[in-house]
Amino acid sequence: MGWNDAHARGSRSDDRIARRALPSAAMLAVVLLAALAAAGCAGTGGLRDDPPYAPSAAFPLPAALEDNVTFWKEVYTEWSRDKVVIHDDRHMAVIYQVAQLPGPIEGVYTPAQRDYVRALRERWSDRLRALERRAAARAQLSTEERALKQQLEDAGGPGAVFGAAERVRSQRGVRERYHAGLERSGRWLPTFRQIFRRHGLPEDLALLPHVESSFVANARSSAGASGMWQFIRSTGRDYMTVNASIDERLDPVVAADAAARYLKNSYSKLRDWPLALTSYNHGLGGMLRAKERYGTDMARIVRDYDGRYFGFASRNFYAQFMAARHVANNAERYFPEGVRYAAPLTDQPVRLRWPATVDELALQYRVPRSALTSRNLAWQSPVRSGARPVPADSTLWVPAGASRIARGLSRPAAF
Image (cartoon, rainbow, N blue to C red; front, side):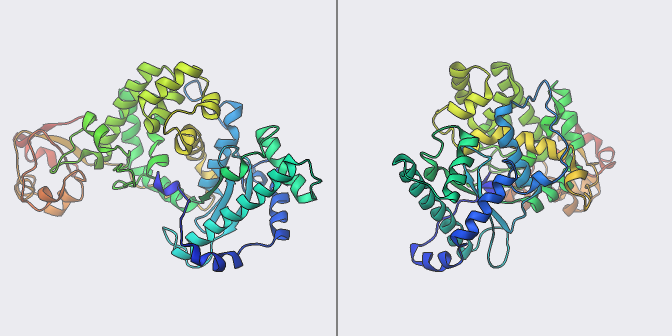
């Protein structure tokens, strides 16, 4: 989930420039007091008439995780990509600052923005270390220090100030990206929901790409995950074809079916949807170990489980899903400017009976070559160029009606 990661590194030689852009102590106090006035809600969304959360039997929402869900709801709906949020990575209601990014706003940080965000985090870590020292010495605290200590204790209980300096994290807003993902989802969700229904699973699992990729078909992560459903290569090979000719991780529908089978298998072993969903990020083995220790108490797992690699992303995965689900089911409330959903998928899947090159397929189905390459996202370069044939038994996507033309070449495929 690289697009959710707002951490950045930069050269220390640019710190002086970045620090000159930092707010003064007085301005930071105003930000802190404004956060307190919002009664613990992240960002400014507390002023909005938000619809209530709607947990279900499959997807419960423990009270202890509501702050986490609210944080991600604000990331998706309130904070645009020109904003960066400095917050506590354990106690998600603790928002230290919502800052405006300097300079041009692009898909990724500019070097100057990376330095600016890093300097913000360092500034807050320094302030929190100073507060920790003064609290440990029982020194008299200033009004601002008392407010900061109170905010931490309200969210994390007595002693939350200790270690807070190491919990400072930055998160960029993704409102525009989530909105674009909503619009893209119109093409895929009817088919995805049908797939999960066919597997006897909760339909709302079809919303998981809002967390993983914002419904971007060719999304790739720094960890090697690919496609709308963000499978890593090793897991993808367990459920799909992944080789030099075909990488079905990049086919949204085939990968949706793989995700359904993965989640069905995880649920059969964990018997709990919050844990099964978290296994999609953390792995089935890790969540089985978490269950051995804490049962199905997801809130306690998030708070206390210290398994290897169970870091910020895994701790927040279920909360992110619940926030994405809530926003998607209330899109008109969070995006009053409107959502123009893409038209649903009408292409037809078939299975090839024998190998054939792209040009041969275009001739057989009487469609332009480009009509096939644009629809078959799993084809790798050797297949797209015609250097290798599309393998037999591969899923082939053709325009609606074209499957009738070359009936002997393929057979129907169902998803």
